[in-house]
Structures are given as structure tokens and as C-alpha cells.
Amino acid sequence: MATVTPLPPAPRAAIAAAPASHAKHAGAAAPRTAVPTPPPVKLQAPGTTLDASWDRKLMRGSVEPDATVDLHGHTLTSAYTMLDQALERSRLRGDRVILLITGKPPRRDSERPHARGAIRAAVGDWLHASRHAGAIAAVRGASPRHGGAGALYIILRRARSGPKS
Image 1 (cartoon, rainbow, N blue to C red):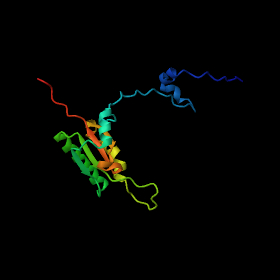
Image 2 (tube, rainbow, N blue to C red; image 1 turned 180 degrees about the vertical axis):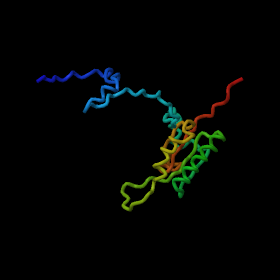
Image 3 (tube, one colour; image 1 turned 120 degrees about the vertical axis):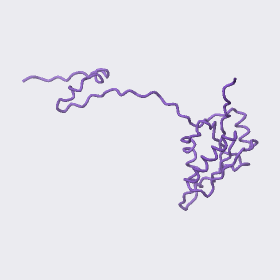
Image 4 (cartoon, rainbow, N blue to C red; image 1 turned 60 degrees about the vertical axis):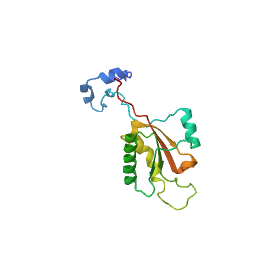
């Protein structure tokens, strides 16, 4: 009777290049093939950085918002629609700072179950997935003067002018 000795493991390149006919042996696992990865797609996500002077002005509340959007009392669907329309109007007018009032998040020590803070929790995802995401320079918490924990500043990028002639 013949003795069987195991083969040494094949290099990864050999596994990826192995023909499919080798996988037909009983009990053999299908060979792994290298799947080409697509080139990375640059997403137009809201920005996260502002220069230090902008951050200082926002923290002090010395920047006056160009527009205010109050989402109190709205359902998630109507709040999303309102936010999208407000971003569209603000971009067309050339606004830079939008004050978004979402309401304060629920307190941690609250005992009753409730759905407070649903809009506030969803705003980040909405802005990231929005058609306006590329126009958003940053999102910051509002100063106490403009609503504190119950509001956000949305800072829009400056509108680029057309090519110079």
C-alpha cells in the first residue's frame, strides 16, 4: 500500500491562478480567485474642519446664522424634506451658516420610554447622504446663545464662481 504525504501549502498566487478543473476532486474546496477591487470612489461627504477663527466665532456665538430651520414637532419624513428644501434655498441664496434646531437629546436619567431625539440622531446621516453633502463645509454644535445642545450649525462652502474670462 502506498503512503500519502501532504503537499506543502501553495503560494497565494498559485491558488488564484489554479484552473477550475482542480476543484472537481472529491472533497476539494473551490480555489480562491482574486477579485479585482474597483477604484475608490470619492464620496462628497460633509467636511469636518474649519479654520480656528471660524471655530472660535461659532463657540462664542458671534456668528449670526443666515437661515434658521426648526424641526420641532415634525416626523422624520417631514423633517428630512424640510432640511433638504432649506439646504437648497440656502445654497441658492448664497448663505454660509444655517442654524438647525432639532431639540435637545433625551436625558440619560429619564425613566419613561420615549422617542425623543430621533431627528437629532438622524441628522448626521441625512447630511452625509444628502445631495448637498459636497456643499457642506462643517457641522458644529450651536453655542448656548443659539440653542446649545438642541441646535446645530451647518456651515456651507462658499459658492464657486464660474471660470474667469
